[in-house]
Image 1 (tube, one colour):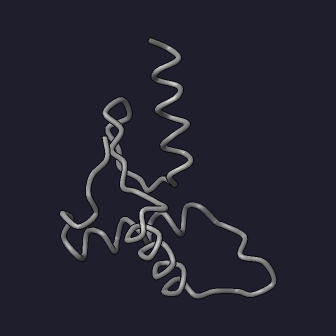
Image 2 (cartoon, helix red, strand yellow; image 1 turned 30 degrees about the vertical axis):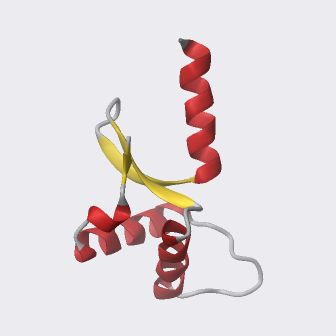
Length: 81
């Protein structure tokens, strides 16, 4: 289930994004970015729809996923029905 990021408390959203950034360990190439810069990038992705906050009822957890990941999840659900 998608949770609109605008409905989350500011601190809750920040903590979710920070947790995601630290967990992902994404390679940003030759340049090292601070945690704050990475959080800012994810916030931008949420605002422009490239990423979304996703609650998994199966796992009872919340995370951030890309639009592509969400589409893949939708395909899996449709395929298994």
